[in-house]
Amino acid sequence: MQGSVRIENLGKTYQTKHRKGLFKTERREVVALDSVSFEVNPGEIFGLLGPNGAGKTTLIKILTTLLLPSVGDAWVNGQHVVRDANPVRASVGCMLMGERGLYWKLTGRENLIYFGALYHLSPASRRARADEILKLLDMGELADRAVETYSSGQKMKLAFGKALINDAPLLVLDEPTNTLDVPSASELRAVVRQLNGQGKTIIYTTHIMAEAEMLCNRVAIIDHGHLLDMGVVSALKASLGRDQVTHITGVISSSAADAVRGLEMVRRATLTAEEGATQLTVASVNGKNTLAALIETLNQSGALIQKITPQDVTLEDVFIAKTGRTLAEDTSAR
Amino acid sequence: MSTQTFPVRSLFSATLASTRMRLLNISRYPGQLITDIIVPIVFAALPILLGRATAGENAAAVFEANTGTPNFVGYMLLGTSAFSIVSYAFWHIAYWLRWEMETGTLETLYLTPTGRVWIAAGVALYSLIRSIFSALAGYFIGSFVLGVNPFQGELLLALVFILVGAIPLYGVTLLFGAVVLKVKEANALVQLMQWGVSFLMGVFFPIAIFPPMLRAVALLFPPTWMTNGVRAAVLGVGYFFGEWYLDLAVLWGFLLVAPLFGYWVFTRVENGARRNEGLGQY
Image (tube, rainbow over all chains, first blue to last red; front, top):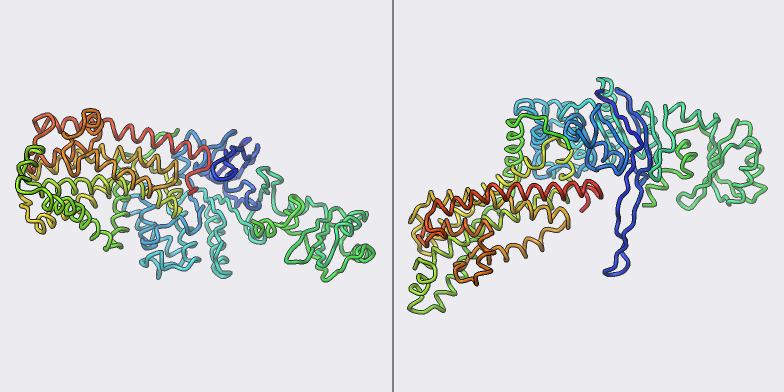
């Protein structure tokens, strides 16, 4: 079916060489994806969330036929990604490498027209489609300038435009707002919503949780090659079984965190370190009423509290609960 | 693997778009095109000047006895012009892959439903246009500079040898492209390759002076036949089989085998890359 994706027990193992000195290497196997199964429904915006190295890119590369799976099957728009690779390629619009997938000496228009040819549009359709895209992205003024003269954000927009050249029912967008300034990112998200409103299915990866929350109907959280959870954003938040999350910043030891975990109303408490301070993220059954108990317990455990921020459950909290760390922490550590 | 779902006409259109894109790209580097023309002239001038300095009075006679023509300068110039076509074929195919790996566009190409053979054909056509243009310009300018009549012999037949020889040549370069895809390195490989190629195809000397085993190896290489065909058509040095159509038939034989074999090896390496680390790693 157009706009659908079905993945069954998909797995991918890489053979890697580990250097052991100047000449010696040792072969190892790295499991990038392990028995991942899910479906993306036609017409939805589906978010793929996970830190670097989680397996998102491997999964996307398999879905777009760049990689062959080690085990399992996947169907995109009803076509098998290995047996029907060309029909899959023809029916997907991809933005995978950001600004890197463009010819910098060519103009924006020339890039779009060239990729139109590779998607088998007629010469007249290529030009017409390029004009439509440039208009949609408000890039008319830049159209006939060499891409090398574009800013990083303008290159990203053109790369996004390239994904639209074949007017595919399914768009795969890998971190499309990376390097965009705030207004440009907002404009791009509006275009994504507009395209989704026209019936396109969109698979969207991002490490910006707020963005995923704003855009996605459903999300999947992947880490270390495993699908940790998946569902409608509101259902995932509700699945934490609480209506309040409290972030406590300061100097908090692991024993203090353990003491908090011991409180009856606390479902989960995760200790993370960011920019020299520690942050305790506490999920409680009724956070507003338990704030006093939290403060008292931390004080008794010798913690130094600098800031307390009670807030509603976010996708970031879901991510922390599932993986035990923040996405920003993972991304900056690489 | 999937079968093609597009009409051949549409695939040819994609091939031509691939050629056009690369011609547009190189048109933005005019200095490179000028260098392309100068290189074969400089390359020929070195042995010509060395020959003039060292060969003495009977140089032309000795050279004619070995090659079939006393036209030492024309022989070198045709050799280096043909070599520039062969060398650029290797550079262009190797650099196509390496450059697109580095810029990230190789993966983008693999995301499209146009088979790699059609894109590679577009690159080969671009390379052929660029290298024939620079080889012809180099030959005519070099002839003027070095005092040779560029209009002697059968130029059209020489062009036929170049065009027929180019197709198996690009088949061989696909084999080379497979190596670049595998080892993710182009510079050192092309440098090594082009010296080996210039030696085997007899850029500066007739392969008749090779020992029999080496001569047999040289004759397995399509550019050897192409270069000799061009020299025979223009300078009358003699075809390997005595008649132009027999030598051309050998090139046609290569034409039927080399591209298919090159493509077969290339797709195997390409699938190996898709099985493991992918095509985007560089």
